Image (cartoon, rainbow over all chains, first blue to last red; front, top):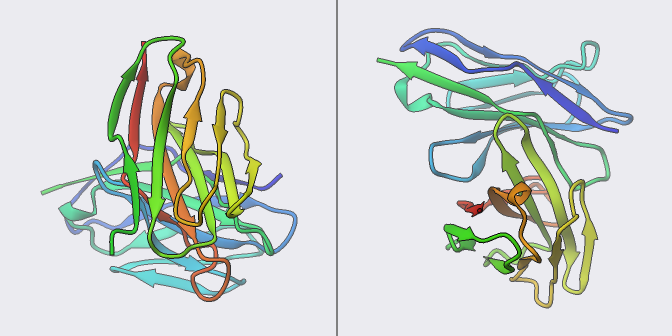
Length: 112
Length: 115
């Protein structure tokens, strides 16, 4: 079945550091890929998405590129802020499906 | 616009008790979902619904039941609570199609402890 594997955390960074969170997927078809973010005490919210190969999703300074050849969707941000401290989830939905499969989540803490 | 509203936010149950987690959305979304979130395990789908009167099992349905009598409401029922059901529960919804397809809107979560 479809699945998502993302790098384990926790990840601790200093402000203005570069952030990468790795995500790879297994799917039988051509999935849509997502990054969701969960701030402390809140529900998940969509950060960005990509629906086909080579698409780049971007939002709030975060970017991720859908790489079909490596089945990856790594999340990057060039200069993190304390407000980026959160849990980040990679997710996929197979084409024609509306349910999402989530990775285990990566906790990111940014120190001032 | 309230989005997805879950109640209660916190609840402690004794083993064997039953309860219902409430979920309501005001976005006229056809699809609704219940997930549970356990530390280091990500989110697991419990049940989902594609419209009023239609529900189906997800990955981890045992010990739970749902109903969908209206588009807006999707309550999750726990029968005979067990410690293994200690978790944070999230309700979510999404539209059936268009640009928002597959984009889930989540509630703030309900933290349940079974002792």
